[in-house]
Length: 166
Image (cartoon, rainbow, N blue to C red; front, side):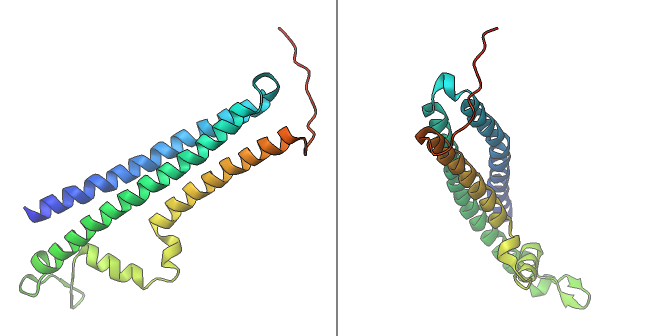
């Protein structure tokens, strides 16, 4: 019963985290596309809508990053509970499982020990890579915002394409 509850808790939050990231990956290109379209049409709509869209993209990246951190915390709680169940109930000395002459400690316990020995583990962890995607998106939207402001202020002169009516 404890294992089932712990597993469902872990599984729920792990799936939620993955779905959250997928949603961000799908939503972000549309936000970028909207910003570029607003920049292209800046003579008709002005600069403010593009700046607002860029700020919204930055905010979106921050919100998704915060939700990802919270989901990661919840996953850690589930992993800790599963590791305890593995160590105290499933893979104990009186129920040992041998692997190449040594006692197997359980999936999560073994994975944690083996991954902690690898070099540059922090840079290869899923949390770091997902966080980097959110950070890069935040910087990209910030760069778009800065470009909108620079062009509006007149520091960059762009050729004006005449507006033609159909």
